[in-house]
Length: 484
Image (cartoon, rainbow, N blue to C red; front, side, top):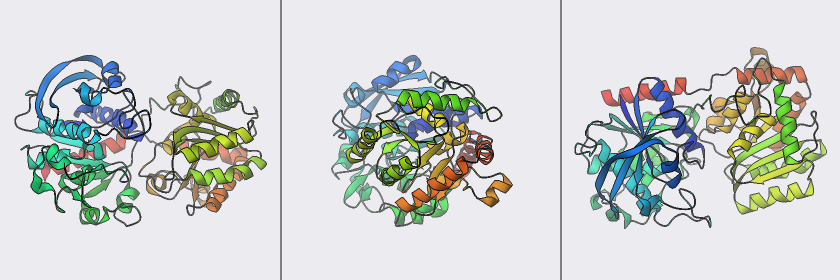
């Protein structure tokens, strides 16, 4: 089966969030199951620099606004998965990130940049594709950035290929002025309720939801949640109509990249049968952050976008009381200025107990996920979440909300789950400061019982959270879509 996997970011080429991790590891897992996968991605400078064996593939014509671009093909540096990069400097050669400029604002031409990504994907699946020796059976799109691909495939690029759209986060919908419909070479007639129109705007994501042959989300619970008013972000009506078609497949993780036995970023490696090395990682993390080196002090960690969605304003409110209980806090992330400033103020107030690093640091994220005793993730909504999965892998129990992929991947610790060997973390009963405080306090109580804590860690580390089963679920879905 030939699969064109269309994405706006992929680790280790370029990363801003969880989409990059999925885009880097799922194609490799599909390839391990004998699927013929190629990734399609914009040719950002980091992508062109980091691809291995990069060479010209072909030119592609009739693109919106820019007219022409060059396609280059290379391989992922770690897995060897083939990658097609769209080499178009006027769109993708930028000094800052893939979506925003150095001032933190969206690039004004984002609808063109990602409209072209979608258009190229559809062209490569069509009868007149400039790539003659490889035609996809499935075009797998991801989030709004490639959401117009199914629309192009249905409206202007006749093809036998089928399209699948994965919704990683419904909150980001790619909404732009209606004038973009014609600028992106889409039929004017498609701008209607049964098409691309969304509250008077063009929505890339709605285009994908409406026209895709199949829809997936990144967890079973999120597939149900997005059909409700609370989580549907205005799109719940359309999603409810297609509800019986939406397949929730829980993300896996790259268990080679995230492996406590071999992780090069850790001060000492360890395993589920010999976990003592985790103490050395904790001590190294405390030293690096300037925290008091104390093996008995519970160390709580955050690696996240610092946003309202992630519920970290609730965590800010709990920190002073946690400090009085002897806890330490390690935070890595960036986001809303108010939250960044709140965490920095706490670090200034409690320098030996609170440490904050604003920004993105891949090695440090590994060190925090391994070195802390508990990971804090009180998200108001969370399509899947990956950090709680990393926590499972590293023997770091998470405190989470009962939502999306958090609900699907973490089992609350209580008498029954301890007895049957399924306890892996702690769940909040509601999204409030009080509920978070209660869940953390319960975790701290179990932390004081070393034998029970070790059992929770072992339960977590023994769960198979690789991509193997999820990748097979995607292959089964592709097969069903093609058969239909």
